[in-house]
Length: 120
Image (cartoon, rainbow, N blue to C red; front, side):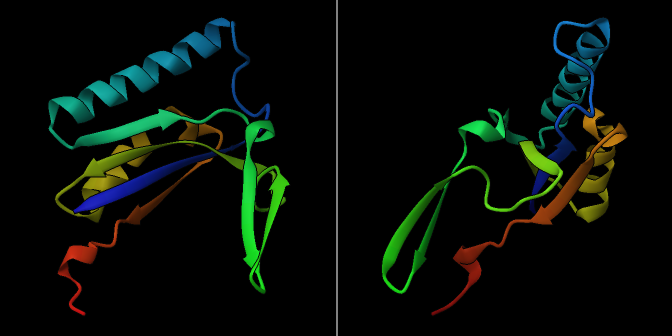
């Protein structure tokens, strides 16, 4: 089953870019990604650019509204994701715990709804 592991943290909560601590964080990501690839569960994953690059689209009463920024005001921001194909939720959670940002942020794990199995 596919699971989306969404990586959230507050801006400035993690190590600063260019510091040795940031290098250690990136090494942790490389290690986790390599493990997921080696175990054939990795299907995708990427970091996202900062929230200052976000654009939100809403349609209300037939009118499209476009605003700069994320969809909600929150301290924690979506910074990236992994798409994994795991045997069950427990396996997905074990990978989520290995994501370095879990130490200062949070990882939301959600199963992907397989719409191919839904009959009309």
